[in-house]
Length: 182
Image 1 (cartoon, helix red, strand yellow):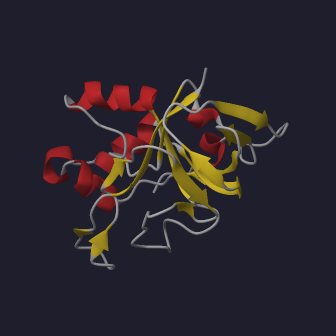
Image 2 (image 1 turned 90 degrees about the vertical axis):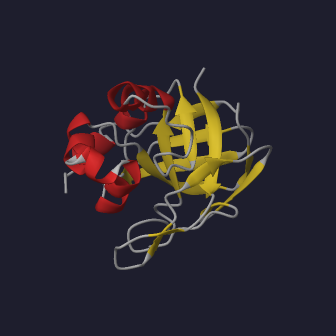
């Protein structure tokens, strides 16, 4: 059964040498029921709304199966939120999700797949800076990106909630079909 393993929100804004000066990539798992609104997880922050957040990028999902792959590659534990994701999933191949595909999470919340994540230099610095040279290309080449999601129906979710694909648009491209590496 596909399920939500964790719901994550910003733990701490961190200094970042990019144009914004801070990053909200440091996300951590939240306990209990968490409200999901049109702009995502209640209490979450996106430091750069140009590239993250907004209605079409309200949430970012990342699969535990992909996190396990990177744990093996990087030789360390990568807890929920490490990839900057709001939702750590299990049992659903988020990378073959179709644009326009809809998921119900728990009893009420519905989300729609909008686009793939595009890795950036902030993400590379977060992962390991100089220790992970070429991270953006490496992450892109593995095609374990995860999708951004639009919130269709608001409500509350919690770790352990079931994820059900309720609509899969026939012929729509997957997020990997439309991904263009930076």
